[in-house]
Length: 284
Image 1 (spheres, rainbow, N blue to C red):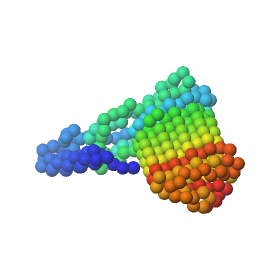
Image 2: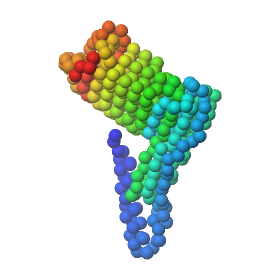
Image 3: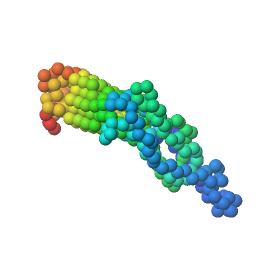
Image 4: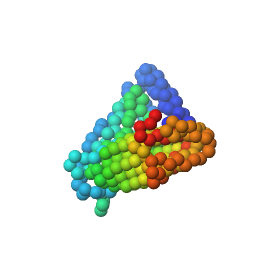
C-alpha cells in the first residue's frame, strides 16, 4: 500500500506542531500538552455489543470504511459484533465513532459513522470490526479497509478501499471480492461463481474449485492452484509477464485457452503487469 502525498505532508506538519508544543511546555508557557494546539490524549478500547437473533440465513450488511472487517461463523446461530478498535496515545483530531448495529427486516446493518481524520503521536491505532454470524448468512461488505472471511457458506460480496482481502474455507454459490489497493488471498474456496479483482496487488489462490470465475489485477502476479484436475478451461493473459501452466511456459504476451481436466468450467485470469502461474493436482 502507498502513502499519499497529502498524508505525508500532514504527518510532517503534525511533527512540527508537536515539537513546537514541547518547546512551549519546556518554557513554562503551558502546563499540559492537551492545551497546546488542541492536542489531547486519545484512547479507545475494544468492546462487544449484545448478540442479535436474526434467523439462520440473515442478510448482514457492513459499512465501515476505516476498519478491517473479520467475519467468522458463530457458535450459537446469532450475530455477534465486536468493535476491536484500539487507540492509545496523544495527538490531534477526533476519536472514532463506535460501531453501530441496526436490525433490518431481513437481517442487520453494521456501520460506523465517519469522523474527521486524526494524528496519533507516541502511541498506536488500529481500527477493526469483528462479526460472528450464522455460516449461511448473506454477507455484503459495502465499505472496509480490508476483510478476512473464513468458514462461510452463504453468498459473499466484499469491497475494500484500502487493504487486502482473504477468504479461507468458503463454500458458496457466489463470491465477489474487490479491493482498490491490496492483495487477494484465497484458500480452500469452492464457488459456483467467483470474481476477485484488485487494482494494485497480487492474487494468490490455493485449493480452488470453481465453475465460473475471474481473477483480475492491474498490477501484480497471479498464482492459482486448482484442486484435483481443476475441470476448467483457463483463459490467461498478461500485458507484461509470462504464463506457466503446470510448469510449462506458454508464449509470452499471447492470450491462450488451457483445458484442465474435463474443461467444463471457465476461469478468466488476467493481469496488466505480472506473471501468471496455474497448477493442478498439486503440481509445482
